[in-house]
Length: 354
Ligand code: NAD
Ligand code: TYD
Image 1 (cartoon, rainbow, N blue to C red):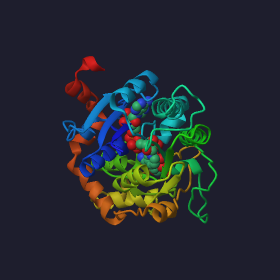
Image 2 (cartoon, protein in one colour):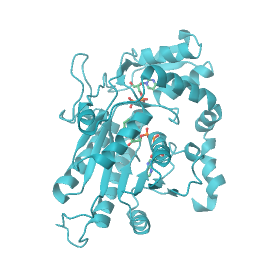
Image 3 (cartoon, rainbow, N blue to C red):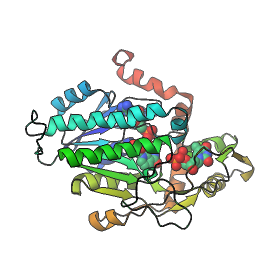
Image 4 (cartoon, rainbow, N blue to C red):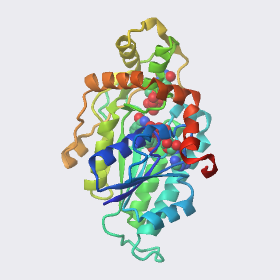
């Protein structure tokens, strides 16, 4: 496996994945297809844009003709799909966009893979594919719904029970993948990871949003009582797991990814304030998110057992490192919150190419 189409590689997790692969696997070539929505930021990749193993294409995963051209040009062995609308709060105000991108986009990608990788492209019953090809769907623990305090962590056997429009769109995409594997034999995997933290996360998500507000002595809006629990994993560990699944897993397998690191939101916010020397009085309890999931927890024993993956980073070290990263990248944060980063594409690639 050498040529990978990475979709959504200008976002938080995708840009960290692109960097991880380029730094650690010199024989891989990556094409990053990203629509550069509000969440896509080429500044995340400014240090590697000249790398000859890396190519950026601005485009939409729903564009079947563009996908066909890219497959023709680069002969991808694998597709890793990070591209998605990813913010639960936005899904509550604009659910249809989430279904168009997160479901429609995946359908278009799966069709492109079938067409490019079938040994007999004109035969719709053909179950024979080019050797070694793989589609990897980056999914989320949110497809399993919410846990009570005493329930065991989600395993891959848990039923899908999504609660937010975002989670429902991701679960729908997982079901589409399942159907494509079952009906057409498309070699694919699904990974379901818990909440990520680390560098380059768009400052609408809990940790970078709270850090940015605290730095500017603005209120920190904690939804409801702040006792909702998330299972936090450092983004680098997520990406190592994704790459292991891509290169080692049997097709058809689903893997949960998580660090067994459950924390209440309020606990995280208090930790952030303490780390940067700001008072708890900045915390403001605001109206709760509608349908807010109470607890996520991931049982990742399958990937640990079958692929030998384990997190390399402990929260106690990786969270302070993440805080330091945001402090040292104040310009990146400033550009992200002001919208200035959206001019980067024009500067680097020229407005005419939009
Ligand atoms: P993000 O919002 O930071 O990045 C999403 C990227 O996708 C952006 O670069 C955006 O421009 C691009 N994109 C959006 N629509 C597109 C389209 N139609 N065509 C091409 N590109 C498009 O998201 P993230 O946090 O990096 O999440 C990446 C993936 O991982 C998502 O699929 C998400 O569901 C999943 N995930 C995220 C987390 C988390 O904690 N952030 C946890 C588990 C799984
Ligand atoms: P978020 O980062 O949006 O991820 P997700 O909803 O996908 O888990 O939110 C993490 C948790 O933090 C979630 O329980 C909602 C909560 N939250 C707040 O309390 N205030 C905020 O301003 C944000 C963005 C999130």
